[in-house]
Image (tube, rainbow, N blue to C red):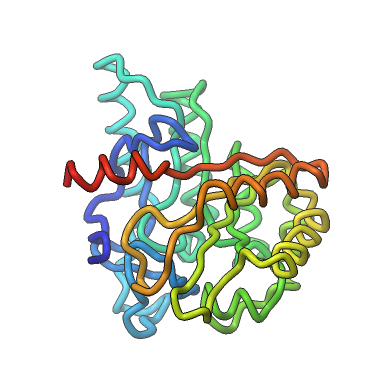
Length: 270
């Protein structure tokens, strides 16, 4: 079963292996996943139709509402002495699709500077909009940019992330947005139709990492029920092998995955 979409602008903090105690900021409409990718591993399930990005069918949260929600939550954290490691713009879709993304980013940054100046401001993005001027203006306001790149070739991206992704344009945009941390999901399909772990595919992905001058790479695999139920997680051993190839190329890499024992313990606790 897919993870339910979020109903609030600010949520958490989420205890993240990668980001610590991360206070989430969701720029997507409440209860509605909006994304221009359709990833087989998405924990929020498949896209439902094609809602108009700027039409009445999508009730985007206003920039002022995002600012107010984050301000109230940070004030509460300050009053209670709550420790936050990051403020992370993420949510149940692609945050940079917000029609006022640049203004939202400016307001979020101003709130952080005023109420939590020592807390890094991060964003998780699928990278597909990084070539747009207004999106780039917004992205540049973040301290940490975690950008998606699961493969360096169009064929694998189409199978894993959905068709219509202009991989070359994405790479060109990321190259000029540096520094960025690349987040890469590695999976295999039980039917053999999807696999971005093969030597050749990983080799093209490594070429892409060097081309965009990635500052760091986060490598992980599925940990929740994916949209495509035939997807399988990749072993920690293989993830570490891929990370080793990244490090051999001179790029720092981290592996984030649960051990079989942790997965079993989590299953027993559900």
